[in-house]
Image (cartoon, rainbow, N blue to C red; front, side):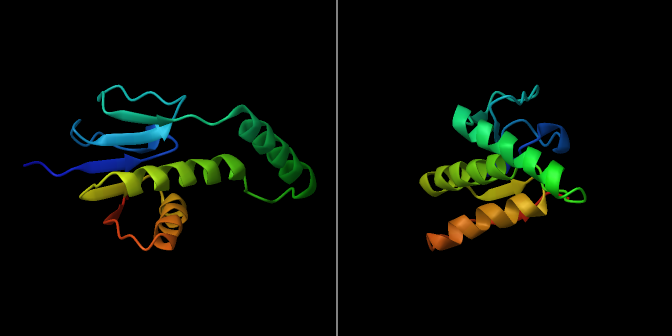
Length: 120
């Protein structure tokens, strides 16, 4: 029986081709050409507006800040954590360390363990 693998990525261009049988959880505007197993998280309009306002604030008042899309990333992390709690996976691969920490923190609040692997 094959392992159930979930790949979590906000930007699908940063994940390599793995095998085509894993589920890829991504934003609704991302396309994955090699698999039909894609769960797309839709970001609501108001969240996008608030995200844009926060980005403008960071760009205007904090010139050296590298914070971008903070609101969108938090919403995405919350929805992915909710999905992972409802569904059981043998392995979860993340796009980067920050995304892994954000989602893991939400999963630990629910006292649930999910196997985690960081995508290098």
